[in-house]
Image 1 (tube, helix red, strand yellow):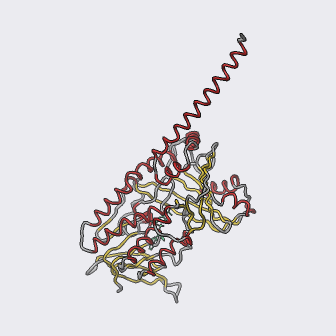
Image 2 (cartoon, helix red, strand yellow):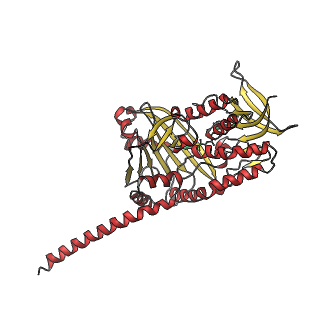
Image 3 (cartoon, protein in one colour):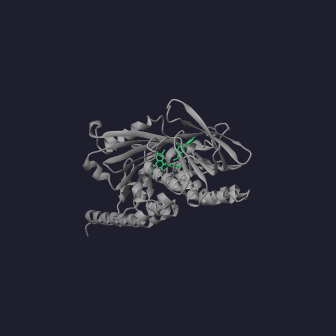
Length: 424
Ligand SMILES: Cc1cc2nc3c(=O)[nH]c(=O)nc-3n(C[C@H](O)[C@H](O)[C@H](O)COP(=O)(O)OP(=O)(O)OC[C@H]3O[C@@H](n4cnc5c(N)ncnc54)[C@H](O)[C@@H]3O)c2cc1C
């Protein structure tokens, strides 16, 4: 039986980043992924602010497109902020995860693709973890393999396949928000691609995306990602929703102005995100630790989870090393460190997302976008990517100045009219 210090299940951004760190530090690590290549679950739209590149030392090869501009379209109001400089990236999600996996093997770690976590049990020293895989010579038959590890890390995303192993499914107990996202990858003509090549477009409001948000993100090779995420639950004003694909198709038809014959649908992909309210996840259990979306590092307001999953992985690594050195309290400290980093902004954004997606009327959403249009671009980015809600107040001064200007114009018009009615 092969032995490792750390086995990580799930080669998403969190698992890949975590394994990469251990490999760099010379820890004997195994990264396990159920899919046999990364294009099989290429589900994420994968937009991120520019800082992600430097923060995790990522090469340009994992980027599909750099974005400069940001647009928000609601039912009545649309606002675009422009920049000459790149403000972020849209990753090629498959290449990003492939890069992380490659750095694990380059650092001396192992990556086992096409292996699925089945179970674990305590062994004589450490845990025995059983995986299934398809034997290469006989694609029909499932084989099993067992490995030994000191620490087992759950990086299976929303599935929480390891940390919840042997327990009843917890996502039905009302402690989770559920987001369902579906995305079309389409190839478009050059002129259409050119229009959107540098811009992230988000859609809010009842016309485009009731009970959630939609987006158009640029990719390379004349491709665009067009998707919709719906917040599960009963909306205060809305009735039954259409199937999620109907909203994405409406954006292609009515916003991009493309009939079915005018674009090529490359693939449709998507996933479900279950987010534990109030950091209610299980972070550790004996020598099992959870990272990434398995502990709700995705931010539910805009569904950004890659950067945060990788950040959470970086937080976990030193505590896992402390545990390996004999500190039995290391994982309790890991949970505290994660909550110190995420709890406050995440609790604020989860409340806001509940209100925006399940409670707001369409007019309120339009007014919100109108209000945002008075903010400087850097403040909007700070608000959306760093959850700096104090930036909202930056819009009050220009808004008040505009109102004062409108009022004085109105007064001048009244005085003119008075003069007209009462000539001296
Ligand atoms: C439609 C959609 C669009 C999104 N767009 C963005 C975006 O634009 N920007 C952004 O930052 N985030 C986005 N996200 C969120 C982001 O993709 C996730 O938050 C992020 O990928 C989470 O990383 P993770 O490593 O924790 O989990 P995941 O990426 O979910 O990776 C988990 C891995 O574990 C594997 N696995 C699961 N079970 C097993 C098992 N039993 N055995 C072995 N392997 C297993 C899975 O195959 C998977 O590869 C989007 C999400 C969706 C659904």
